[in-house]
View 1 (spheres, rainbow, N blue to C red):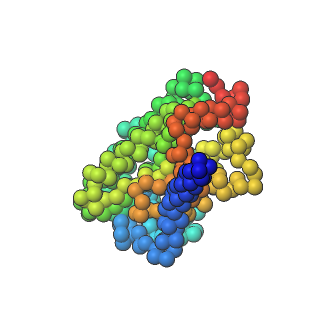
View 2 (view 1 turned 180 degrees about the horizontal axis):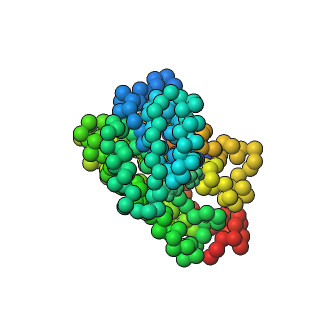
View 3 (view 1 turned 90 degrees about the vertical axis):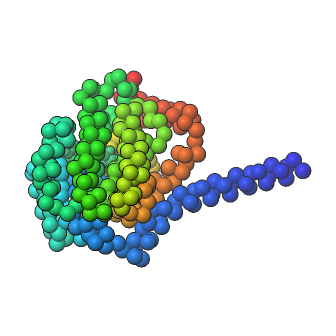
Length: 316
Ligand SMILES: NC(=O)c1ccc[n+]([C@@H]2O[C@H](COP(=O)([O-])OP(=O)(O)OC[C@H]3O[C@@H](n4cnc5c(N)ncnc54)[C@H](OP(=O)(O)O)[C@@H]3O)[C@@H](O)[C@H]2O)c1
């Protein structure tokens, strides 16, 4: 009798876990299938121009290409003029869209926004992608007190500051036109405490709460806010990361640790469909597993994995 009860409890939890996994995998798969069946006319729905920050490399560049593919004109904002010109050329070789470039270094703080505002003032902006973000270069994971002061400050002023101030630049126009969407590029590190990544994870947690609160404020103006929280993506930010090279088997590496183009091709499908999304089916599974773990278990496991991967390099 006891065995039978235990069997049923086991089956109940197994079904619960399977249901949880399926329902969390579905968003990205549903979004991708839906966008294939019924592609959105982004310029019509939101307005003809999209602004992407940090758009000369990695996710920002790949996401900009996906938007151009969907007929959005682009404003690329990044640090290096040379890379901006090259990216503009690359996109215009692929798609017949207008591309404007603005050189700006988001680590310089408030003073850069006056020029950005002036450059954007005559454009009908429908999409803002707050993508620019920085993390500590190798080792990415390190104790808070061993992280250089400039790095900590840059993470705050770029990841948080640029999100708030860029949103402030484009919002009045979106509210007036009663259409638009702001996409905030967060990270899965905002979902659970991330030891040895405390400052970066906290900047992304800011983005999540900011997105939720702002959405509540903007619903009556028909303006949407989306929070994306991907896992690790193969870009310059993570390429020297010992964690990825030591923990991900090489045969599944390209799937579990996608490049920016693969990620962006999935993430863009959830635009306007979900307020919160990892943007990619593998990250949905990882997130579902992460959510089942207690914070204590998660942080304890993470510290173990980090110490194994980084060894002495993990500065404590
Ligand atoms: N890669 C990941 O695993 C991952 C995971 C989750 C979330 N994210 C988030 O995704 C976003 C993009 O990350 P990524 O991996 O694509 O980064 P990335 O490959 O390092 O690219 C960063 C982009 O931002 C620009 N940029 C950097 N600092 C800047 C500054 N001070 N002013 C203006 N532009 C600046 C870079 O321009 P330059 O070429 O001139 O440097 C580049 O175009 C970030 O917000 C990041 O936190 C990344």
